[in-house]
Length: 526
Ligand code: ACM
View 1 (cartoon, rainbow, N blue to C red):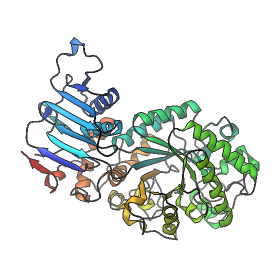
View 2 (spheres, protein in one colour):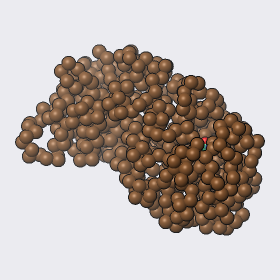
View 3 (tube, rainbow, N blue to C red):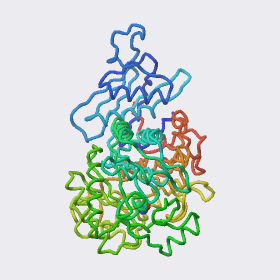
View 4 (cartoon, rainbow, N blue to C red):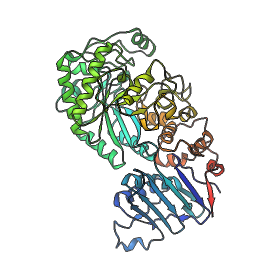
């Protein structure tokens, strides 16, 4: 018997050979309403069969007697976000210590659903699952190309399917500022109009922002907003020229302009090219810190999650002492607002960061240029790190050389296998399991205009990030062969959800997904 493909692979799965549960329109769901809706939605998307919420309308005679029940319960005990599923012929019992666990169980139930000659069924199984890391992130760059609320919602839907729990939005860069702030209205009035390549820009109103935050929260994702400073700030200078240092036109910047086109960065002119590292806020001007106090103060009030990301990457024209002074001040400002600062790993070069500042590593799987040492600073300070090794997990790298979308600067192309074959504790020497808050897959959008482009670059490689972030390091199905087969097993699910994934040549899309049959951990229990 072939079993459904589960991705990310759960910590423990025991298939039983007893009869399956039959899923029908009269299947009743009992339990907390939000979780029940999540289960009904997940199953309906996958199967077209929407079980009914028994709690919603217990007296609805028209829907008839329940043929079976999916019973959802919050029960104390167990790790945060964990869940258990037991499927019998007449009943599915789901327990979790929290609402997030029930939500993840809903995603797993949808992956379990199987189309048979007798309709949709869910095989008899016991699953006991919990995440490896507490922070499982995806990032969308809405600055290089602006992405609408509808697209962000769709991206959240995709992330939720794979049990990601943080959405990092890169809200500002040289090319644009994407969030309206009441304290600094000039930003979106003057710096939001364009994207890379002269494409249209845009920004989120505060109502849009509240919508994104709430939509994410309903799917158990915490929004992590990033305002990238002191570099990546050319757009700030369009709104507040007095805050911007003159662009530093390094050889790297001029080479990028030559390779990818666009004009050289010019003060007061919207920048729509792809160069990095030329812009900076003025470090020794108190007006800069008044600006940051307004921006991060307002962002803190608008954002319920614990983190504010302050960037700190690629400040290539900023002298090291100035950079250190700046990063110390901006991380302390954020900490004083009651939020935990996150910076890219470069800020680890700065002494005097706010002590709980989290570092996000974006070097390669094998660190170069002292990036590992900068990353260790955060752990030495007593804080944790997020790992985003660019040559494994940057979703905007080309998967194959002929891809019309994506870039190749991170060690060339990133195949699905390369996206899968890395281990978080093996990246930075001295940084072990307990030092790692989690894993995040960024999608930068220099070449990415819309949801189709996002899907093409993100899928299927986003599933590798999901499994690295969620599944145990040591597990019989944590192999490339099992993973590739389970990716193939998602195709029907993605088709049903309207996800326009790339049909990676490394995946046997049309083969039956049964890799977990042969894996030693998938026991048959009578
Ligand atoms: C980065 O890719 N500059 C964080």
